Length: 92
Image 1: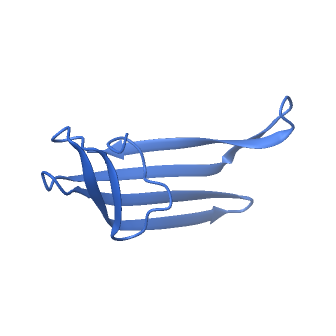
Image 2: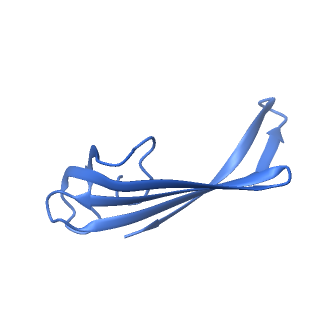
């Protein structure tokens, strides 16, 4: 659902469809602004993505934030690959 997650690969003025967290209508939305901030700490880094999304039906904005911290990477022995936990926080 669009009302609780960051919209992947969306840039400014990207049009998307989804459910509005305010009016509950499944319809068109526009990403008004997206911004990525990356902070490096020695061997680790924290990447934070921000988005402001506007419902085209009720004109209500929603705010999304996603944080990825490389300190949360670990090696999954079963899958034999590196995995990261992704902390997602959204604001409506």
